[in-house]
Amino acid sequence: MTLQDGILEFHIENTKEEDGKRTFDENIGLANVRRQLELLYEEHEVSIRCEPAVFRLFLKINLRRYANI
Image 1 (spheres, rainbow, N blue to C red):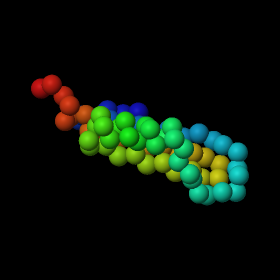
Image 2 (image 1 turned 90 degrees about the horizontal axis):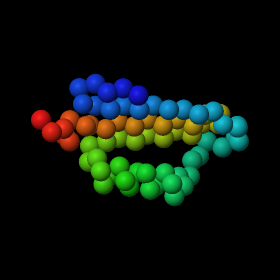
Image 3 (image 1 turned 30 degrees about the horizontal axis):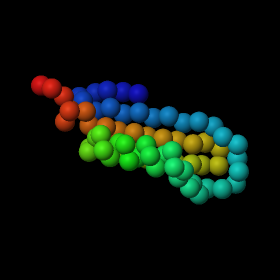
Image 4 (image 1 turned 30 degrees about the vertical axis):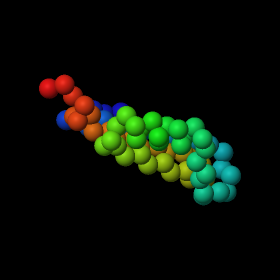
């Protein structure tokens, strides 16, 4: 996780058992998280990659817009 010039970036990955599938069906939990981000942070990016042996998530939020300066 980094915070630089009001931009928060968060990267996380987790290994998982290889299942041979490269497709990713988003579950209700991830859909709810996406919706909450939309409601709270207009300027954000979310990227999710599900590979055979690893799950990766990238989140970027522009916090400058919400600073009390």
